Image (tube, rainbow, N blue to C red; front, side):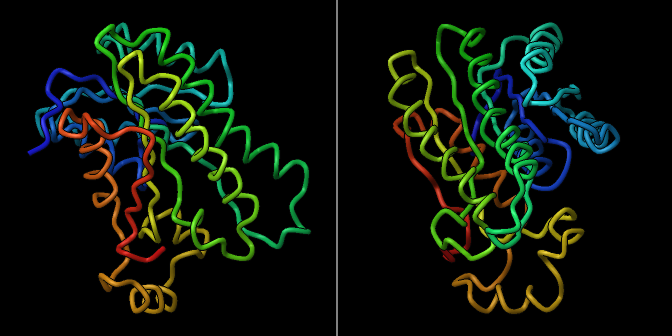
Length: 249
């Protein structure tokens, strides 16, 4: 069983969807978890309440990962309440899908600000305060980096940049005892995906039929992979991208 006792994790966008599954998995393994949110405070506080109710330690922290000042404040708050962060999960993301020619500069700026700049800022802040014993960064990518679906140019290109950043940082930070990996989820059944129409009864059946394991993913499927990568059991893994997609990629 994965053991994260004594660890302090920050999960960006950790209050709902895949982020909630990740927060829950880290807490179940014994980590103290900071659940960050940009706007949905009730979701973050609900995730914290669930963790605390199950005997864990957690706190909700507000901040826009694309803002240097917000990121600095998040780390200050987590350090004050839980201690230095040794496990960072970059899960916060925005996404939209449209034909390439319909992408506007505003769409581009919004997506890259959160999905790429946000990761740069949280990683920079992480290394400034990480304990001398090192730590782990897990970036949440997408299986779309493999299937290159039409209509996904904006989102997938941002996640492609994140995937490359993962490999570069693994080389750069390895000598400091910091491992950096990515998880690439496949189609995952979340409220957000349903709200955007990405998951509905029609395509659930279609995607499940095309997936070797015969179903969509659930947030806890992704959370368990992240918890493993954050643990000492994965101590010889860095610079890798793990597809958590039921075999469909």
